[in-house]
Image 1 (cartoon, rainbow over the protein chains, first blue to last red):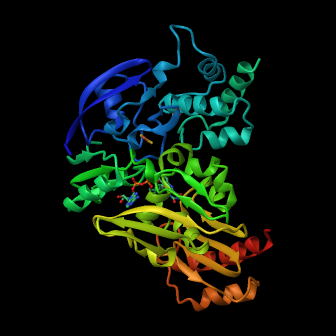
Image 2: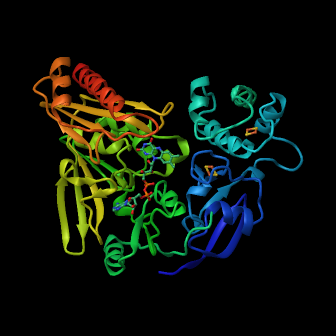
Image 3: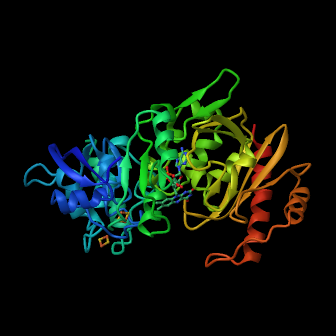
Length: 158
Length: 267
Ligand SMILES: Cc1cc2nc3c(=O)[nH]c(=O)nc-3n(C[C@H](O)[C@H](O)[C@H](O)COP(=O)(O)OP(=O)(O)OC[C@H]3O[C@@H](n4cnc5c(N)ncnc54)[C@H](O)[C@@H]3O)c2cc1C
Ligand code: FES
Ligand code: FES
C-alpha cells in the first residue's frame, strides 16, 4: 500500500509514465500533469460530463476516477479526435450545425458522441439523446447537438 | 478537486484484499468509484486507504446455471448487466440497470457498489429484495450467505462488516418482475420507487421511503390489496426538497400498485 504510485498510461497514442499521488483524479492527471487541457471540469461531481474521456474503449467521466485506476490503460481525449489540421466529420458537423456556443461542454459531447457512433453507427434520435444523457450543455438547448450527431452519422455511413 | 491524502492498494486475490481490509481500520473497498469518489470529494468520508477491487477476476462476471439461477460478481457493471446474454434470464436486471443515470455512470458503476452503498434512493436495493436475491459475504474467517431482506441494515449500512467484502449476488430464476419509479428527470435519481415480483407469491419492495427497502407481501396483486398493504406498513417517509413526506407516501402507494400490476401481467 502506498500514497503514490508509478503509472504508465497511453493518451492519444503517446505513453506517459509518471509518479502520481493516489488521491489525484484522472482529470487532473490529464490536464495538469500531461497538459492536455481539452477535457474540462464542470461540476466535479459526475453530473455534467465535461470531463468525459474514453478509457480502453469505454466512455467515462474522468473526474470520477483516480489516475492510479487508469494505470496500464489507453485513453482517448478530445485532442486525439483530429488528425492534423483537418476537422474530422463529427467535429465539422458540430461546426456546421452550430452545436456549440461557449464550447465548454463540447469536448465531453464529442467524446460521448464518438463512443455512441462507434457502438451504434446509425442511432435514432432517441438513441442519440440516451447516448448524450450524461452530458449537460448550458447554452445550445441540445437540438443543434442532436442534429450534428445525426448528420455526422449520415456522412460517416456514406 | 484535491482529495485528502489516501493510500492505495490493488490486490490480485480476494484473500489479499480481505487481509488488507482487516489489517487497516480506515481502509475501504473501491469498486466503480461512482459513489465513493464523490463521498471523498465531499469529505463525507475520508478513508485512510482504498482497496481497489478492479483486478479481482473472481468478483466479475455473470454465470447462468441450468436451473436459471444467476450468480453475479459484485464488480459487474450496469453496462455488463444490460448487454449480457446470461442476465437476460432475469430481464428486469438489465431493464433497471439501463435506467441508472447515464452511459458513463453505467460503464463504471457496479452492482456490488450499488448494494454496498445502500443509498435509500438507489435503484438496486429494492429490486434485490423483491426478487429474493442472496448475498455472499466473505471475511478472513470464511463466507456466509444472507438474504436481501437481511442485507440492508440502514442508510449506507449493510451486513458487510469491517474487513469483509460482498463477493457474490445470487438471483433465483423468474421473469414476472417490474420496477416503477418517479425520478428526477429521465433515468434520474429516484424520488420514490417500487419493485415487484410474482414468483409463487407476490413480493413488493418500496424504495426511498425508509432507511432500507420496505418489503410487503400482500395476498394478491389486486389494487385494493396492494394499497391496503402499503398503508398498513407503518411507513413515515422522509421529506426533502423533492417531496414532502405525504407526497412521497402518495407516490409510493401508486408505484406499488403499478409495479404489482405490471409484474403480474408479465409472463
Ligand atoms: C451522476 C450520478 C448519478 C447517479 N444516479 C444513480 C441512480 O439514479 N440510481 C442509482 O442506483 N445509483 C445512482 N448513482 C450511483 C451509482 O450507481 C454508483 O455506481 C453506485 O451507487 C456505487 O457503485 P460503485 O461501483 O461506483 O461503488 P463505489 O463508489 O466504488 O463504492 C460504493 C461503496 O460500496 C463499497 N463497496 C463496493 N463494492 C464492495 C464490495 N464488493 N464489498 C464491500 N463493499 C463494497 C465501497 O467501499 C463504498 O463504500 C449515480 C452516480 C452518479 C455519479
Ligand atoms: S466535471 Fe466530471 S462530470 Fe462534471
Ligand atoms: S456550448 Fe456552452 S455549455 Fe454547451
